[in-house]
Length: 288
Image (cartoon, rainbow, N blue to C red):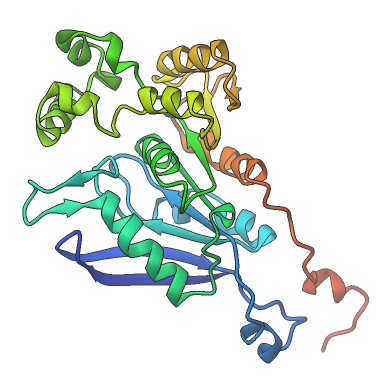
């Protein structure tokens, strides 16, 4: 794979931002001209990091380059700070991560790179906070993303909680983070009515027959497992067509996320592409 380190000034973030991109590279068995002038458009995986992470997380801590090469996928990995992949107009000069990705990065990738812009060729996935972001994009942008994979994250039923319960049951006890989100939305009811309430959105889209293709997975020892099981039970009770998968004994960790991002690629229907195995093809040859 070729690796692009993209640094550009974002209109929606008010400054420079970093994005790492894996690109399908030329096989040694293919001529330069045949490869670079083929006109081929590749499928795209939009891959999101979690809290405290950045655009290098998936590069450094997983084998996503290997998995994507086998499937000839473009993989786009933006930096999002701890934004929950939402819009924060009240932060500094404005930090609108949702708009940056949907209105800026997506058209950049689709027009600057040999990337397919068909929704059925664009998939969004992420871990933890990035899983929440992937769900947000999949539910709200069906014109961009054809499917979503949510690793180690699940929505809460905000509508069933009182104002006090919302904060006592905040995921991982992160009440300060939730309070920031509530203030950003304009209050508790506004927060519940926003796209942050993905539990409500999933139900509404299911009832309207517009639920996107979704995959949820988690380790049974993950601190978010109880939220996951509650969400899974609701979805199964309503006969939603969502795939769920758990890994016994695994927690909130890269030993889980690495193999399961490959499972997500399989869920998206990205088939492995036969490549000329240059080293195997040299078997029996003599070298000086």
